[in-house]
Image (cartoon, rainbow, N blue to C red; front, side, top):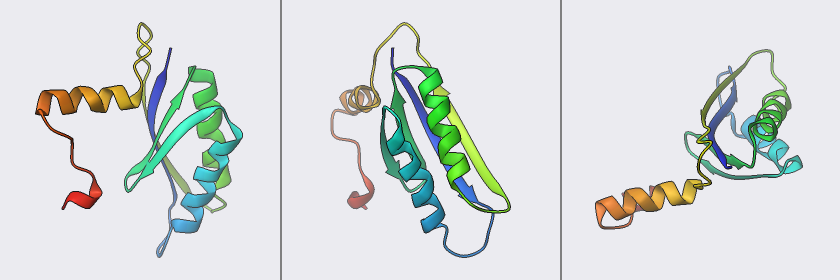
Amino acid sequence: MTVVALLSVAPVTEGSMAEDVADAVAALDDFDVAYETNPMGTVIEADDVGTLFAACEAAHRAVDADRVSTVLKIDDKRASDASAAAKVEGVEEALGRPARDGDDR
């Protein structure tokens, strides 16, 4: 089973959040998860939901701020081992072309 999630962790503050977000992303390295960071959050893949929750909690706690906003969206498709890459490949197959990335503007 593969659990895929979109995680967004950020301090509630004015100014740049880059260092705090970097701390949250770095916390994921302590877990057996794969991840890819994009402008809106980090897509995480784990073998099980327990590992995913532990990694997300560590990312949340890694942000040292008076107030932290965390959003977590989970796709726990229990009858399939489809990866996040496979989901993108399905969309690209339906499009008949590669999906655009941030450099295609």
